[in-house]
Amino acid sequence: MRIDKRAVVVALVGIAVALPAALYLWSFMVDDALISARYAWHLAAGQGYRFNAGRPPSDGVTPLGWAFLLAPFAAGGALSAFRAAKLIGLIAWLLGAASMGVAVHRMDGGRRKWTGLALVFCSAPLGAWSVAGMETGLVLGLSAVAVSARVIGYERVTAIVAGLAAALRPEMVPWAFVLALAPPVHLRPPERRSAARWTGLLLVLAPVLTVSLARLVAFGRVTPLALLAKPADAALGSRYALACLLLTGPIALIAWRKLPPWVRGLQLATGIHFVAIAIAGGDWMPLSRLAAPVLPAVVLAACAIVGRAHPAVGLPRLAVALAGLIFVFVKVGPVAAAVGEKRMAVIQQLRGPLSQSRVVATLDVGWVGAACDAEVLDLAGVTDPAVAVLPGGHTSKRVPHTLLMARKVDTLVLLLSKGKPRADPWTHSWFARVVELDVAQMPAMARDFTPIAESQGSLRYLVLRRTETAR
Image (tube, rainbow, N blue to C red):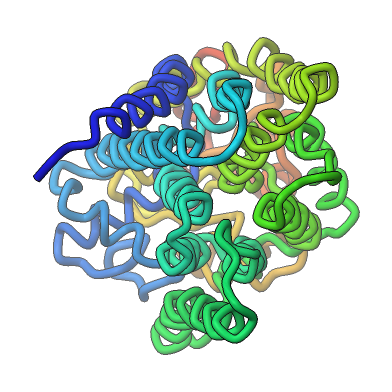
């Protein structure tokens, strides 16, 4: 079999522009990544698909199937699964970036089209989320392959892979449908065009429906539990989408004249996705997580636009988009790069105090679940249906005192507000989130729970143990 050396070279170019940001931000992580890792750990241990061993299965991982992919690497515990997740995400994203290099090579336009790949090189969201340990890295790779296949002319591949991405991330369903319906690079006769669009829709729909039906059978609902735990706020979502629009590169797509239909299709798919994440209510995680998976479409469309536009028009537009990305990289990048070490330090510091716990109540269940094998009551409701249905947002659930008593909670882990020392009594302390403040004000908490440990550093968690007299 003959190897196309030019295709290999341009694929390596794609990898070369994607790898530096990912390596710089390798230590980036969020607490939710460890939730999936704990599910994978329990699967590997033969305890089934559940966050807490011995408790009923729960739909605590939005990308259904992600924990199963991690399970073969989870025999050593949740942190082993987490490390594998980071590597899987990086490999998937680099393969996707390689396909983007081939796509840029195959599209029309002068050499200036390659300057659009600077959007990848300067993107902290792409670098960080490819290695965050969540499913986002895999979704980034799938998204990049789907859009690259569209540029190269493989419409069915586009529909299949976009459908897989949407099955993992439900807010991407509109994007996947628009991408499947977008005009192909090589236009066909009307009758063949209609058949191709129906085929594309069905190929997108198949994985999405499969996951929805599996969720319905297993958990009694077609939507993820996170939709209940984190109710959408359109106002917050709109502000989130606008900020992402300004800071992740889509400004490079503001062009219309003399563009081929397929580029307009990528523009429309991107716009639809930003509307979708606004309706979904945005996200609390840093670096534009919900916007990141469609950035490969932004990059390839920008490459096509810059390659066709007059330099005096196309390059300044690209420079404006890069300014937002560089601002984020400089301002947020160093902080994001240090997150993982800080989180792991907390796990090491508090692993011992948590080792004797039987039931821990906390908001940040990911690292707590990785630090001990105790049952964890999720005060955000992300992994617990009983809490998910309670009123309030995911950091402000109105958790009743009776629930803590019914679950026989013997340990609390609460995050102190930044810069605020622990008070005496501890119930007078300033905690970081509303639900933690509410827990501290529950009846007789100062009498029933005693501080036994406090983490050091910028993340200051207070560990409290139920007193013997209160048991």
